[in-house]
Length: 264
Picture 1 (cartoon, rainbow, N blue to C red):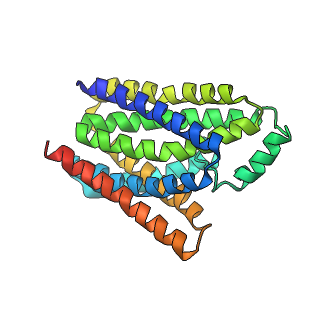
Picture 2: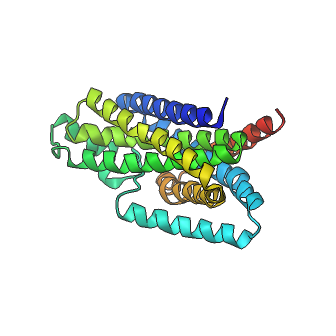
């Protein structure tokens, strides 16, 4: 397959798969399943960042300090974007304002906010998906194996995020069908971002290396700032062992995937 085909396929598959899985989780209200996915997603994101995208960025750069500086700037940028409610990461367990029990009560009592929160979710999620598309394209242009691993990590963290967004849309007065359609339309921003980045990066190849550094910054920021704090809400030893095991599983799967594609 061509690089562009890989980018489109990964973007489409990632969007559809994450939204369908998120809808199933949301409608069945399996919060424990979501916790498992969050733990695995942390490992997948950290594994992809430290074992794949960062090493590739270092390989493409003659100045390692430039890579680490871009990484630091990227983390700061994502922090600012999150403060501006543009870069949105919300899950069923880790947003106090979107607690699933609270949400279920407000939905059942029809105490909706007339779509305001839902619209914020869609705008933020569309922007987020567009950026994900750019990062996926940069990874595939650098190396197909890197693109596949990066896509897997992004899909892993999209599922719990989309589940949280789905619940917020229901709480904002959207029907289940409309919430699913809105999320699906938002996911197409990944394809748009990926295709635009593909054509842009072919004429500006020098941007691939900094974009890989930004991809690493995105994965590290989401894992450390957004996902890990939610796990601290279950400090009991059994939950901690399960979380650590799943994080290691996420890291191991990315490492294994990388080795499989390297030797094929």
